[in-house]
Image (cartoon, rainbow, N blue to C red; front, side):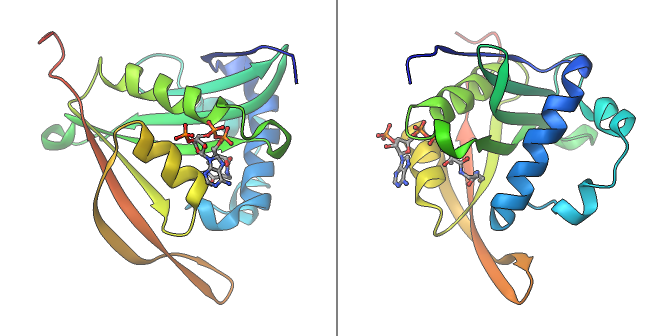
Length: 174
Ligand SMILES: CC(C)(COP(=O)(O)OP(=O)(O)OC[C@H]1O[C@@H](n2cnc3c(N)ncnc32)[C@H](O)[C@@H]1OP(=O)(O)O)[C@@H](O)C(=O)NCCC(=O)NCCS
């Protein structure tokens, strides 16, 4: 596809597009996310809008093909005082028709760049059989530190997840 994909922060006004993509992600890849379609589909648009961070450090990045949202990746800092040096990447998804074109990699790189301004370690978790996501994360420097057994349950099937971390330079150290 020749359309250029650009990445920017989602804003509360992107709520409808974000909701549509998020529900597509939860429906099509239930084993890849801790949240479920059944839990999120009934939520009011205002609730979704309120979940889109309006200021740093938490953020959701969207990949746009022209004006259409085709991918996303989230970042959140742990709340508690003793854990605020760490953040987690969540909700990484690219629409199937846009996969294999480095959109996922660009989104994850954007989260890493953003995280480096706020935390010294970025965490992620990925299904141990999810080759495309594992490849994406590993190629950008994430290192595995363990396996969470039966991390996700979808129906009668359990999925193990690889736990990943990425050390980031102390903000202001470079
Ligand atoms: C994971 C996902 C975001 C990757 O997005 P994408 O835009 O297709 O990925 P990219 O084109 O940027 O490719 C990134 C890397 O993965 C590799 N890759 C892509 N698809 C692959 C596949 N099916 N098998 C193996 N490697 C694959 C690419 O070669 C590239 O690695 P490289 O740069 O070392 O060559 C996308 O597949 C997706 O949305 N999957 C469903 C949801 C999901 O699993 N999310 C992750 C939750 S942890």
